[in-house]
Image (cartoon, rainbow, N blue to C red; front, side):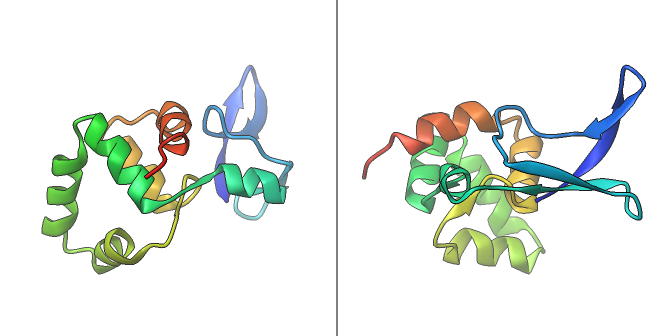
Length: 118
């Protein structure tokens, strides 16, 4: 995952989403960003099934709104993601953009969705 840098208290650091555990963050001066590296366990913790994600969206009252947004989108890759993904990874730009656009706190969402057994 690539995250942008930010300045906090005069110090440059990675702008890492709240609650995201990672092994290391390597700074790339040429692009002024960080590459996050994950252990296999952390990668697994960042993944849910589309069924878990949709079930949690339904519980949060957002499934219909997000489904409609995706169906009406001209972004073919977004529609492919929604229809054919075998897992959702919270570190992907697609998940990050959907969460941001619909005001979803990914830490809370992932915690609840991981517990859903269908």
